[in-house]
Amino acid sequence: MKYVLLALAALTFVYPFVWMLSASLSAESGLGDLTLLPEQFTWDNYITVFTKIPLGRAFLNSAFVAIVTTGLVLVTGAMVGYALARHEFVGRNWIFYAIIFTMTLPFQITLIPNYITMVRLGWIDTYLALIIPFSLSSLAVLLFRQAFQSLPQALIDAARIDGAGELRIIFQILVPNVLPTVLTITILTFMGLWNEALWPLIVIRDESTMTMPQLVTLFSVGGRAEGQLGVKIAAAVLLAVPVVILYLFFQKHFIRSMASSGLKD
Image (cartoon, rainbow, N blue to C red; front, side):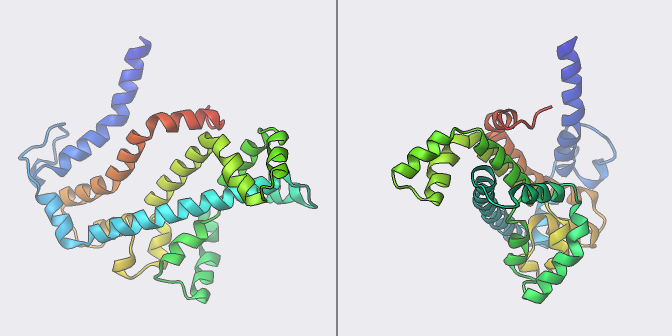
């Protein structure tokens, strides 16, 4: 009975995605039936998407922004987390509490101040507007701090005796010992950045700089799809495929890292 219930739950989650893939390969007239196999199989929906919008360029933009920003999050998160975990200074706990407090605030609250900052810096329609505001993550700081606190102080003392500086201690000694945390932050950050559409819609107007979620959103609601549901679904499939592939490739590492980092129920 347990496996039957689990199988039913899995089908509940999987069915919409399977139908979406099937619908993207069906002719417009066959979208009314919720079947798992394409009706009147065709590639026309995908051809239309690539014809009407520069999806390849948007894919490269999203990949560049997500990879660079994730790297910055790992570097800044490790450095701040190390300082909060291993250095004694006035106001350390208050700074940590302030960082935790920012996690409770919805991103929409900071949209206007962040947009004004981007305008004053002249970063509108540039990659900097997509990267810099997300280059420091409070979640990354929290996870790195907790992970570094769990490591023995003797490890750091031995590295200092050998002449290692602070940066070398962080990235060559401590980070390799908390790989589950690194993987958790990498996957969560990359997936969040890849799916981000609201912020790019606000700060990017040049089509050559648009990310894939932004371009697909504008394509679906802006009239280019000409009301064709199959074309909209095809665009959504193309947006979801990279994340699905990433998850399938790192599935075991993702589950292990989530469990090791204490993010499980």
